[in-house]
Length: 179
Image 1 (cartoon, helix red, strand yellow):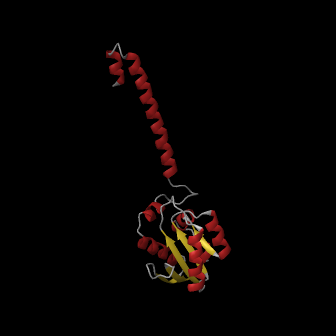
Image 2 (cartoon, one colour):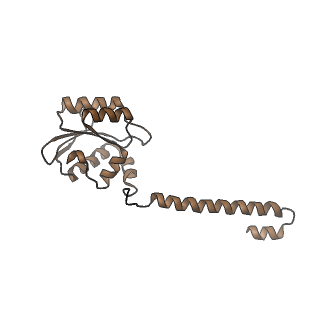
Image 3 (cartoon, one colour):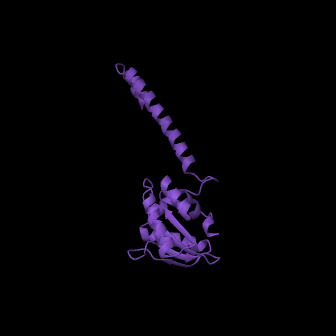
């Protein structure tokens, strides 16, 4: 189209040639970006399949709790009960590991740009250790944890299952805290 316009237009020929060059440059950049997106979104050996977290992000809170319960069952836990709700006493799921240890889980389905903070973890420590006498405590979130929250969790024996670890667990990797 540009070529036909350029041939028939004498007075604007220079502007049309420049416009054609600009459009060609933009098309080239779009092809490069498209190829890069396909590489980033495609399956890789070092990354779980795309869509695992997108599916979780689309869930409501109860669906997310049920999904985490499925993962616990898959990893050998029994007696898995989803408790979530206003009267859950700070714990959304309880279970037993294959070797009989008591598991309690707090689930938070937050937007990926939010973070679990140290007060969040501190509240869960009280619920997990004092109210529920847990052997294994998991704080499972669809977002990252702040550095302070991770430190408090580690010092208190809480397993912080952040977005990246949740993605690996969901894609089939066993969660070491349950083993």
